[in-house]
Each structure stands twice: as C-alpha cells, then as structure tokens.
Image 1 (tube, rainbow, N blue to C red):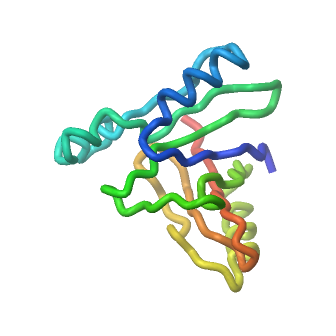
Image 2 (image 1 turned 30 degrees about the vertical axis):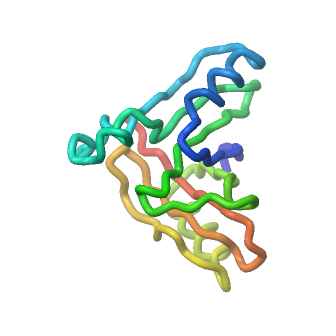
Length: 141
C-alpha cells in the first residue's frame, strides 16, 4: 500500500473549504479540476461546471487532503456520515482488486473497479459497516 488519505465530500463549497484549509496548512494545491474540465463537462448545467470535481492539498509529508463537490444535481445526497471516504492508493492493479474485493464483501459498491479518464484504476464502495472507501491505482506516466 502506498498511501491512505482522507477524501471529503462537500455540498458545493469545496473551493471555499479548501482555500480555508490551505490558509491553515499552507502549501499549494497539487490538483484542482473543475467539472467543466471533464470530457463532457461543457454539457453539464452552467451552475455545476465551475464546481470542484477533484482537489488535492498536501498537509504533511505523506498525507494529502482531497475532496469533491458531491452535488445533488449529479445524483449525490450528502448526509452526516457520507461526507468522507478513506482513500487507498495501491502499488498495483492486483493489490487494488484484492483490497476492493475483500473490503466490499457484504457492502454496497458505488463504482466497480475500472479504468478512469484521469489515468487511474479506481472504484468506490461502503463496507458492511457503512465505512466509505475509495481504492485507486494510478498509472505511471
């Protein structure tokens, strides 16, 4: 396993929250992608296009705080308890599959493991105890 990081969901105010976190922790965003930057982003509602699809802020030597705007217009409904994930970055697809398949037994798969447009093999689920996980293997460029 390479890294374990917190992944937060916000109801449209990710940018505000992460500018606040940046003011506290310092540093620079290593990634900031808006929904309009996606391959079909220009077809999204105008009020959604400028929202944050993904942002990353290093907050320690080996810890990255990450987040997204989980918007109802995109099929998400935030409630206390589903506003964060544990994000696991693995060293291989094989490890990603092993962890995903083992942890998701008896749980609810949100997105099965599959190649993603951002260059990763990724999946998400809630385990049988309700803990939300993201599992990813990022391909080397």
